Length: 404
Image 1: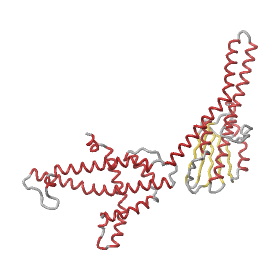
Image 2 (image 1 turned 45 degrees about the vertical axis):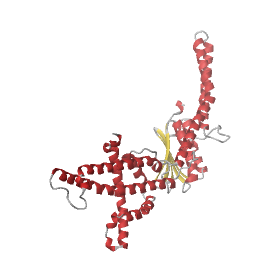
Image 3 (image 1 turned 60 degrees about the vertical axis):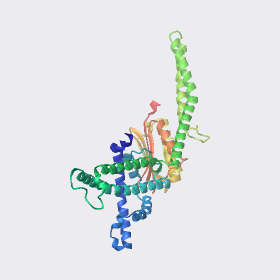
Image 4 (image 1 turned 180 degrees about the vertical axis):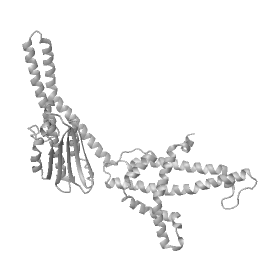
């Protein structure tokens, strides 16, 4: 029964739709080929549209056009929805590696669709013809109709017709299964994409481990002291109130020191300079940052910076600093518009000119660092290109000084 499963599988007929779509995409190229054939042989008319030689001749044109057409996302969507292929899209869709692999897929789709769509258009009516003449020969005394389509195949049309159709369906099922298996290689992530993803994941895990190590070393001991002192105070509060009061004062002092250490550790994360633990800049220093960054900055800050806690103020400063560093390194022009809005949340937007979508660098850590800084505060950070502009957006909840 497994051999017959493709006959009633929905995947087979969805794949058949994918094949017919490829045939439809092939038709404009075949018409161009037929026009070229007609220019060589005016008497040929448009017969070239069904000639194998014309089909083979236009395939290089299909391959060349596939590198220029904006068809990559369309082909991925069709492969996922109609073929049932599963794959992750490349990180850099504009890279040469992604474009040539998608071009190969488009060329295969069009070529396979052209052949099998033609076979479908010819074979399905022929199967109907066989069924009709097979029934005519079986249930009447007229016998098979003479002519080029007569003979035993037509006489036994009730048998040969379904066999031809089953063979076509099986061939369609095998073809779509093969293309489904090939889709991740040509439409999915390439080796460079997987390497970049692995490096980004390694950097993320390294940052998480560094955060855990720093917090354990700086805050773990202080919390242990708090636990011991508070337990001692709870046991002796009735018998020695003076000692209990002294212990609770020590708890408060230790806790405040732990908070300061925690603040310093988070502020120093991902810093490699010798003065990483020195007092760090915050939102109040944005104007100075804009003046010293080497970028022509249009700075706009709305809201009261005093509503922010010290940690949030410093991390937002670092996000803006990293974004301006990227502008200086990668933007078409060293200029940027920086907007900081302080309302129910702190929102940061940094926009710079970029005529083309920037290509991701495998060793780049800037965007990862901004996302990590925002995540520590319970917020988000992301970047995107649109209409000639590269925009970095970050949003974090406002934590007031009293909550730190």
